Length: 302
Ligand SMILES: [Zn+2]
Image (cartoon, rainbow, N blue to C red; front, top):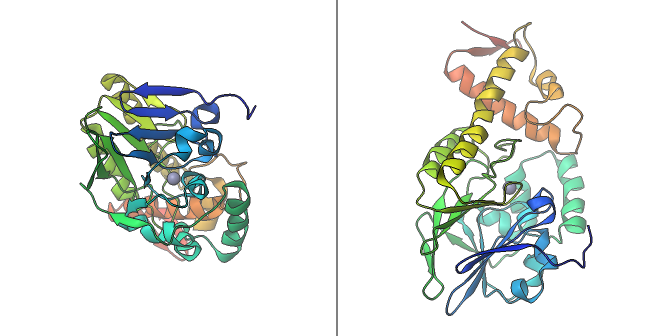
């Protein structure tokens, strides 16, 4: 990446989208800025925020759609700007212990991760961050932002809707081929399913994701991409049942085979995230009477 190159940008009325490396592929992301008559808001602060310059550094406030390391990477540039985040992600924005509980990984993994977020993501907790709730609005001067709580990825994950412009920042419901991520302590598979249904009906004309897809401007195209993204959940359920077809497996054995990530993916946190996500699928299947847990292993039932 050539850091001196200008950051690509697309404008939709008062909304500007600054595209991170490879359309915001993790660990980068896409930066949204919204200009009203009396205030300029930043939606999240991904790593690309550090390459934008005055257009980012002049933000009057930050509204976080959710808390993860790659969405806080520009906060250190705006120490005076108020930071708003959904109540259910608030503790994660305020301190490292809060963020550690939010991830819910083992102590050894968290120690490695802390070093990574400090060195690669300019980690800067904000004890002064303020909580918002579903339906809360910000009047930037002729431009209104409304929070739409869409939990699942994290407990506080929210879309930020710029009402006059019909632009919805949908964060990490990112329409990627990877599919939904629900591997943290604050994630919920059941909530994610409900949020995907709500998002389908959101009154927007432009959808902006944090990663990969960037911007979608056609409703039919959006719905197709959303359906493909959502379908990854049931594909994972089917694969998990397939993994149990030849006999019982412990959670550890299932984790080693991987459900969300490719088998070769070995980042320090992946075992923890896989265990969490696989556990959610197994709980869902158990409630449906399709699997059961005995003698320390999971097996198909019925
Ligand atoms: Zn995230």
